[in-house]
Image 1 (tube, rainbow, N blue to C red):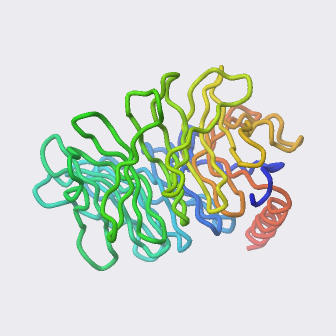
Image 2 (image 1 turned 90 degrees about the vertical axis):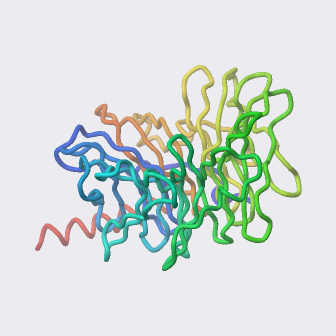
Length: 348
């Protein structure tokens, strides 16, 4: 059963980093409300972490580069993964509030170029790293040990790109084969499994997120274009519907442990969606509380078990900002916490 039956939602504007273009995007969301994303600051694109107590914090960048970084995922301990431009080029990092930004390095034989894309609450991280001039492999980074080339164990995969990791250390993503790009799921015990594609298409599929109960969501080609899917071991790959009245394509980008799915649909105009088995496919903009009707939510990337959703929206004043959507009554409690923190800071 779904957690909150899809709203109604309040919109929390996460703002942006100082000195920039007032543009930010949110991608990752933890179960306890940390948000990770990217903001255009005075020096360029910078990764951030946000929480209701500290607001938006700049993660910095790796030494020797161009002051650029991006953040994609965050766990419940506030550890963030992403990539930053160093003297070598684009490299994966892990960040926490004690140690700051640490370079994860690269796989042997490569140039060191890569990016971090996922992290679980155990601190295990995944990403992709170059292994040759024009090839990259999925890696698993285990805390306190070296980077493991899991992509080397994928039969028939020329390149591999992971996108998420769950608490069971199962990894999902996509790999390039001789027959095209295919979604995969990998684990230490089972190895790699290619998920195939939806019926009627060219076989293309890409897995974008996975929950802790083994459900995978992403996008796959069909006779009618690219469509969102949900997959599990028992039922295989099933296509999600498009928004009512739409004729376009869609992709699923996030799934929580209750099976609620978020993503983006191009039904006439691009619309972020929430899908639940009980209520079907609905536009997030139709689920906003009246007080937030002047917001235009444009992206939805992650959803946690509280029903909170991280994404991007256009504010009533036209700013493109990272947002956190919270269903009532959770948003009331969070807004009260933020107000208390702001009041205390004014008194200091």
